[in-house]
Length: 331
Ligand SMILES: Cc1cc2nc3c(=O)[nH]c(=O)nc-3n(C[C@H](O)[C@H](O)[C@H](O)COP(=O)(O)O)c2cc1C
Image 1 (cartoon, rainbow, N blue to C red):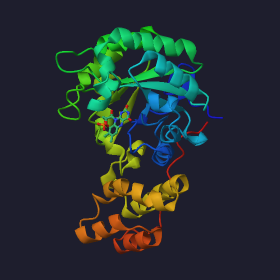
Image 2 (image 1 turned 90 degrees about the vertical axis):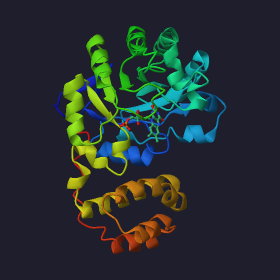
Image 3 (image 1 turned 30 degrees about the horizontal axis):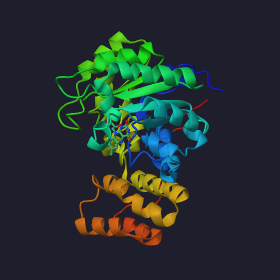
Image 4 (image 1 turned 180 degrees about the horizontal axis):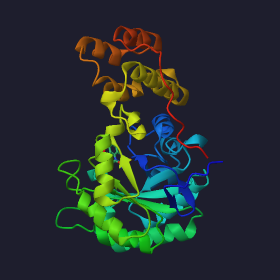
């Protein structure tokens, strides 16, 4: 057993490390999460899953909640606008044995926020408080929230929302420092993360505009956050969880990690689907190192592993020489 002190705790759950892969629908599936966890992401968030679909027994929704033991601590993220449905869904998914249940309060997509779910909840801090209270009283595991700063610049409710989360039993809050109206535009407001950190005692995870190792340290010193959550900058770049910038990673290592990622996808989805779903990741792995457009297109169109391997060899990405990542958890 490790004697190492945890970086922070989510109620009693020790968290080792200060970098966390962000939940990303379409990207942070089991294969990518487990890869990033191996590289040092301190915990695993599933992408958001619709409570209504869970309650309706939709197989696609339930499949999103598959995880590996090595990913623990695992956070299931669910979303809805309705308090009762959120509770019902949380109680049901708790049966699968996650470590934490998180309520999404940040999704800006119109179909979600427009019906009062995701970032739609930010308009009503009292409702946020009721949801967190109901879930944290009824569940056996910690309840957390991932928020944005508010609906729009005129309704910056983050401080009321953050207090509502803490005062009603929430065990951690992750803050994407933009409003719903901003989507992914404009600079993230790290001052807001600092203000929340200053006002709460539960762990605060900062998120938004971290694209390289230097940004990690800048966000930490600017905000005092307990951990930094990284989304888009981790796609094609799990090395960020080892605090290594993509530009410093040798090609041979990129080649081997891509294959490891694809192997994980094949195991989870089967060969045929894996190669298709892997394309969006592969694009990001190749972007910084493969300028030859024709070859890149051929690689992205490959439908068989053998063809893909041959094309990757041709692109100077042989499957040798990978130095395995240091283990993420030593306990
Ligand atoms: C493709 C994509 C899917 C996302 N899906 C989710 C999601 O399911 N749940 C969630 O809380 N946030 C989701 N987000 C938001 C991210 O978790 C994160 O808050 C946002 O990307 C800002 O962080 P970044 O600048 O490090 O990317 C998603 C973002 C992207 C780009």
